[in-house]
Length: 503
Image (cartoon, rainbow, N blue to C red):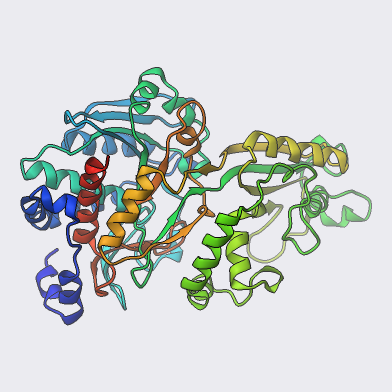
C-alpha cells in the first residue's frame, strides 16, 4: 500500500500496530522472530494476492468465472508449496485437493471455498470486483469487494501466513491436507463427491481435525467460538398452471382472473401452510420431530453469552428494533442457535418491472431455505416438506432442491477448540462460547460418518457484509483491539505452532 506508512503514523494506526498479537508460549519457544519480519515485509505482496483473488468473479449460481476461479486458487496453492494440487471433477463445479507434507507428526485438514455470492453493482459504493482500499470511519483502511470477508480475505491471509513461514526458511509445524469447493454459496450439492473420493478420504482420515480460516473479531475485538453450525436445505417451490391443471399455462390478461384460478395465489396459499400465522414457527408436520433439546450445558453457554454480548449492537447491525415475539435477548440467542427455520429468500412471478402490466401469471416461484439443527437431516427435512404439501392439497407444486446438508457439532473439549481458546486467551481475549453458528457450512462431510472429525474456525481480524453490498475486510485497523492484515496473519502462524505443540 503506497500510503501505508502515513497511515501507521496516525494515532489510531500506531495504536493498532502496537497491539499486534504477542506470541504464545509455544510459538515464542520456537523462535519465530524471522516469521514476524517476513509477515511485515510481505504486506504489499499479501494484499496484492487478495486483490487479485477478489478481481476474479467466481459465482457458482451464475456459472460465472468458475473455471478461472478454480485455476487461480490452484495456482496460489502451488506458489505457497502445496504438492499434488489437483482439480477434482464433480457433477457440478470442480473441487480442489492438495497436500503439503512437511514431515511433521501432526496433520491438519484445511477447508476452503472459492465461490462467492451474486452481486448487484448498483448497490455498491465501490465496484464489487475492484477490491478498492478505502478508509472506513472507526475501522481504518479496509478492502471492499465480493468475497472480501466471505471467504477470500481470511483464506488469503492464511496463505500469507504460509508464505511467511516458508520465506523465513522454516518448515510448517504441521502437515496440511487441503480440500476446497466452488459451490458453497449454492448449498454445496456436490462437495461430498470431493471428500469421498478414495484418495481424498484417505488423506483426510489422517487429520486431527478440520480448520476453516475466519475473521472472528467483532467491532470491538470480541470473539465468539461456535461448536458447530446449522444445516441447510435450499430449494424452489414452483406453482404452474401446467402442473396444477388449473389456471393458465402461460401469462394471460388479468381480466381473466374473474374466471380463472391463479397459480401465483396457489403458491401463496401453499407457503402460508409452512409456518404459523405470524410467519415465524415452522408448521411442516414432522419437520422438527427429531430436534435435539437444548442441553443444560448449552443453556449455560447461551446465558453467559447473553450477559457478555451487546444486544443494542446486535440490533443496530441488523437494522431491527424487535426480536420475534418480543422475546428477551437471552431467548433470542437461544432461538438463533437452536431453532430450525423456514425462510422465504425470494418470490418471483409475473411482471415485476416499472409500472403495471395487467397479467395473470401462469407460473410463480418461491426460493426457500430451511435451517436445520441436531438431530435433523437434510433428507428428512425435504421429505417432510413434500409430504406436508401433498397432505395440504399442494402435491402439484414442484419441489426442486438445489443444495443442502446436515448440521455439524464439535465437542467443546476437542483439540481444535482448546487450541483456539488458548491462543485467544493469551492475547487477552476471553472468547464467548456458543453451541453453534446460525449460518451453515458443509462441515457435515467431516464431522459425520465415516470421518467423525472435529471441525472449527479460527482467526483474528474483522470483516462484515457477507452476501451484502460493500462487503469488507480490515487491512489496517484503527482500533487497537481489532487486528488488521498483519495481526490476522500472525494469528494463523501462532495457531499452527500451538496446534503442533499440543499433546
